[in-house]
Length: 235
Image (cartoon, rainbow, N blue to C red; front, top):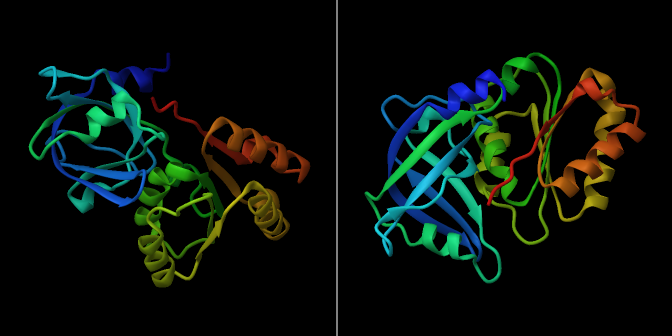
């Protein structure tokens, strides 16, 4: 186990629920207060344990990407439920304002620092847009390099209005909303032709998305050292 993970694991805090939003069908956003001692970087994740009112106990810790940045004065995570929702999802969505949430972490890597001054291609699918929303909020005033996002979702592009506003303010940021892997691969090929191995390719997604994208990048002769993989087992 990496020392950075151990450090995060023993970093414990308590937040309080502010609100639960439901922007579209099975998509939910949970807003919490920021614990006084908690700090994180855009793209990080943490372990969250929600209070279960039915049992008067806390649920087991589960990992979620953090979708906000500290200057927004809120700690935000996103969730897309199954159909029908799992019992765990039902219990999380039953939380009420001021309910406590235990947190371990954060964990992650310094993607912005590690890729500084180089073109950055971000790729994600579905609810995995959550950490990229935080990355783009952090980068919205960075005009030093081109940044592109390929966002694949079959049914709904969460945060689309916010992402469009960021791109409107910063013309170095391009966002491609696509609906399947075929479209995603087509856009990726165009970006590879433009930036090649001068860019970093950062993937947040499911196993299938990561494996498919890695295979595509390899076929396009992108060196593996230019590829950054971020995979999170949700719940």
